Image 1: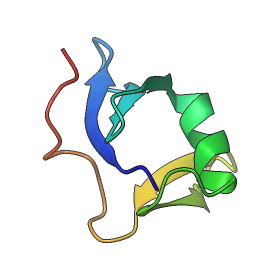
Image 2: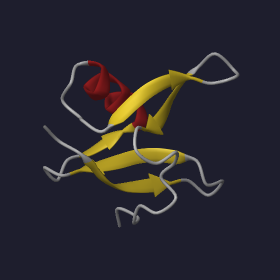
Image 3: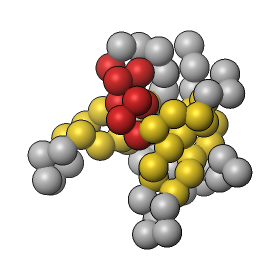
Image 4: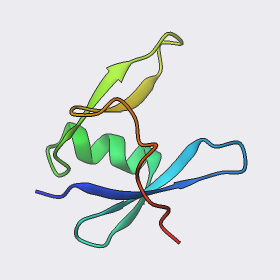
Length: 70
């Protein structure tokens, strides 16, 4: 199983893509699909207040300590 190892943020600080332990750089939406299908481990999908899908790391609550992709 892959894990998320880095994140890329836009100018507003929103996560827009992820880098996995296999070296793939994937979009936020692709990450949602891969988590749902079990390709990426260690992250769960939870519903936020706006009733949209959001990512929440199952061990820590956010991705603040992850390095940037580039």
